[in-house]
Amino acid sequence: MSLRTPHTSPPSRAAHPAHPGQKARFDVVIVGAGLVGASLALALSRPDSGLSVALVDAAEPAPLKTDFTAWDSRVYALSPGSVDFLAQLGAWQVIDPQRLSPVCAMRVFGDGKGSRLDFSAYECAVAELAWIVESGRVQTALWQGLRSARSVALHCPARCVRLLESENAIELEGGDILRADLLVAADGGRSWLRQAAGIALDVQAYDQLGVVANFECAYAHDGIARQWFGEQGILAWLPLPGNRVSMVWSTLDAHARSLLAMAPDSFALRLPRGWRGPGHDAPAGYARRISACAADRHHHGACRPRAGW
Image (cartoon, rainbow, N blue to C red; front, side):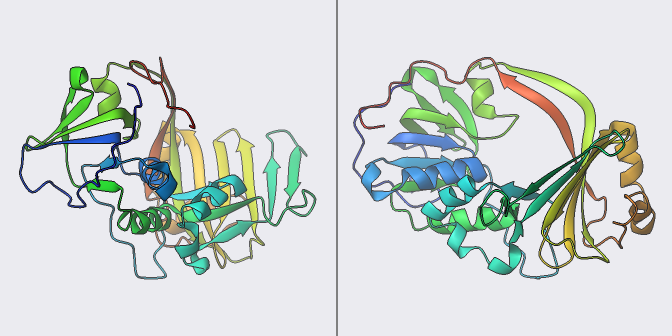
């Protein structure tokens, strides 16, 4: 899949072309409008790139929660480099600061008695080690930028039905065809585009689930992220604004399912002593399969970036 001279004609801003079955050509077509696809589309839309971009996803992002007491179960720990990248896109600045929590220190406890590692932003001479932010807040910020990016055509919602390899194109449900010099698969672990391109995926299952929950704690977390390694898996606390924390407990399937079945108070009693607190928002209400995935290759065909990339 080669990159040639950019197509300078501005793409349509409509979610779907006005006439079903029409063909459109872009420099880059990105399948998948999650954080990866949306941030890539916004980065490529900068005025000096000269690139035309199409972003395709089967669904639009969920509306942002307006209730301040409601928190996403899924949060991210962003490194300073990732924050700088989002700031360059204009996305970081529009996230409500009251929904952000800096990580000032990290404490990691091993499975051996007395084993411990400490990291401090002060000792590293940085303002913070990372920032904790809800997934939905980042997604919404990226979409605010995309909706005003003139060089990005949003095909959301739109479902891909066929990869046309000879034309370097994808066909959407309804007959629209999007051609591109570069097709990007950003549609997740079960990527439709990856499978359509015949790129195999080697999956190593760990037989574990990551149980995620938000808590309101009795003690201040002081901006410290904590992690424990033990016989029942790996338990992590990520600081949220106020006395809230986001918990991720990676543990064997059977143990994870028993945690998910517990009432909030019972679940809280299973946590490390000194960090027990009443469950809040979504106690033990979310789990994600843990596995290692590796593609047998990361491109299909020839990718020859033009000079200046």
